[in-house]
Image: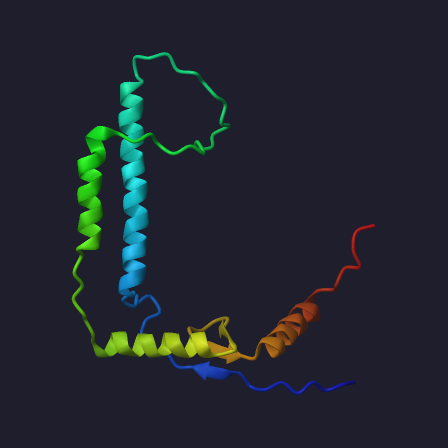
Length: 155
């Protein structure tokens, strides 16, 4: 009989709801806004393209339910609108907003990002624990193999 000494996991004290969303950075916000705007403009181009093609003969290709891999054609009518959308994103002004909750969430996120440990939720409570990765894998393996037998593989 061997004894495996495992360190006790540290409790990660989060004194606010995990459903709270921290304010993202200006860069991430602009990147996501640019991506979503690009998708929106692409859908507008396709709509105009298919509206124009409505009366023309279509060559049907089987795509098996998948979207086309092609980009929508450029539409001259949409060019001024697309340029205005790009200017709107470039000239976006941000107001710095801060409060105690946002500061605490930023600090906790930084602590989690810098920690080499893994964050694990408790089974029946809302508690979070920081485990060493190797110890967590060993603990998980012990918990699984205590109730289930490992298979040797398929024969």
